[in-house]
Image (cartoon, rainbow, N blue to C red):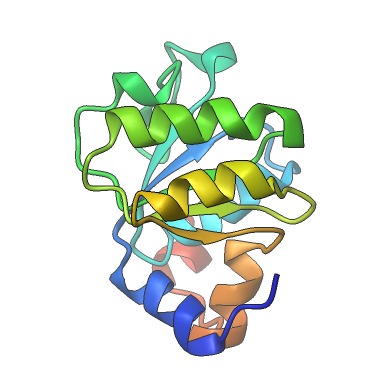
Length: 150
């Protein structure tokens, strides 16, 4: 799984809304701090985790699943185990008509699910961290809101 910097940078610059599947409310979990990082860089983060329905994070209410999202989504960022990926990708392809990217975090890859998404014209990134790639390709400047806690 080799991706060009141009491909990754294009995804990160065209994306505005990210549905994060498996996001945690625990600030030490990678799904939380990666999402916080992205939120502070201007992305709208839509949290998807049935364990936290009724709560909010980054100004958004948790959704139990992708089918509960009624806004256009550019990217689905997956923080789930390998065996959960096919159902996440299937739901994304079924319920998010404007989806442009499926991103699987470090340690997460699923060739069949990736091929299915690519067959529908959706870009796929596997086994990469959005935060790491953002910092590497777009810089890691910390916005004032993050420094001040805003």
